[in-house]
Image 1 (cartoon, helix red, strand yellow):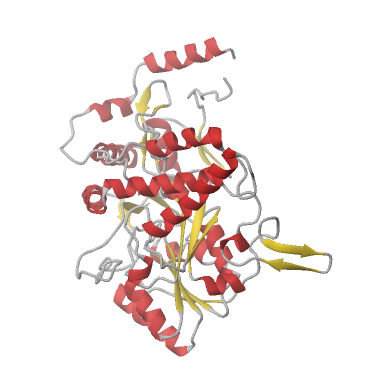
Image 2 (cartoon, one colour; image 1 turned 60 degrees about the vertical axis):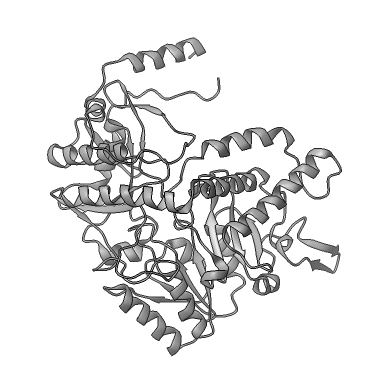
Amino acid sequence: MTVTEQFATREAVRRAPATQATDAAARPRAAGPGPLAVLADAGLEVPVLGGGVVRHVNLDVAASAPAFEVVAQRVTRVLPYYASVHRGSGYPSQLSTSLVEDARLAVARHVGARDDDLVVFTRNTTDALNLLASAVPGDTVVLDLEHHANLLPWRSRRVVVGLPTLEATLDALDAELARCPAALLSVTGASNVTGEVLPVARLAEIAHAHGARIAVDAAQLLPHRRVDVAAWGIDYLAFSGHKAYAPFGAGALVGRADWLDAAPAHLAGGGAVDAVRVDGVDWKHGVERHEAGTPNVIGAVAIARALAELERLGDDARREHEEALTRRLHDGLAAQPGVRVLSGFDSGVEGRRSDGSGHGAVDRLGIATIELERGSVGLLAAALGAEHGISVRAGRFCAHPFFERMATRSNGLRASLGAGSSADDVDRFLDALARLVADGPAHAYDQSPEGWCPRVDDRPRPRFDD
């Protein structure tokens, strides 16, 4: 297809009669929060089955968040100066080296790291936790509500099954650590399935009381709440850029140096060594020990710019924006027949917030996972995307033990919010969900090993090679 033909196809789609999804999106809405930040996908229009386009509604932010627009702009500015780092004599190499090291300092400052903590750049949270797993000198205790990234890496793990309330679950963790001491307690900062936020500072107190360290999987928490490593007593923190509006292939592990300096190099290769001989190797200490090879300069730059933007938006503003949308989402789901919202704790997350303060209020990120009384959530998710331009996710969300403990069905459907979400996004989703649950999809779908797909998919696909 020529470039002219491609543009003609796009224009035909744009001018085609709108579907019901467009009509629903155009109806007047009650006042509510608009987007808090400008994201790279702002205003994105997507085709729907039968012709027409609608504004895309991204409610799959918990999986991967679009880039902040300012992050995309920063990456574009930096790319002409990209070069290999550390030993290059040229100006671009020296500049790239400075950008990586400045990004390391930005991460440390943003998360409240101690002066002697290491900031190791990794590919993502999974990579960071696998690195840490190689350094733990003993057992690791985890909860069953963890993402697989915080279940599978630990070579010697003991799993505590969550109980109906958070208080009872914390008591069970306390008892397990007292019964058989462990080197590490590793917990999520917030569930990627239910959005429930755990009291990290309190968990740190429990771990330290039994001589254990604590690691926090902050993949979900950090993009939504400010984290303070030193103040909360966190020993290790892992997070991903792609969930924090910097989807350029980088993450980080922040934490104490002694275990990491004693661990095998995460990757064996150039940059991780002081000297290589035929009969041996002298490995470096510090961050270089675990960052062999050419680092992801662009990914590090993107993370630093994204964290700066989160700071500019303000902790209180981000929290107020998300809490208003989360209430709107959960209230709307509670009113829908045939839908059940999953929760890890009977009374929500009672007690303290992540920093240990406050009592009584549910602390929950903008995440809701539902199961249906009847029908397939996979088919529902496919129809939301294909007929209404709404992105959600169906499955067990790489948290199988936790999901199976809560759910009565084999899979759930998750909607997740972020800084670019709006009240209209929530309303579009609730309207479409109600219509699909009541009437079913308007088009035919087939199920394959990869999931549900439209039997006839007439949506044009953009070409990226022109």
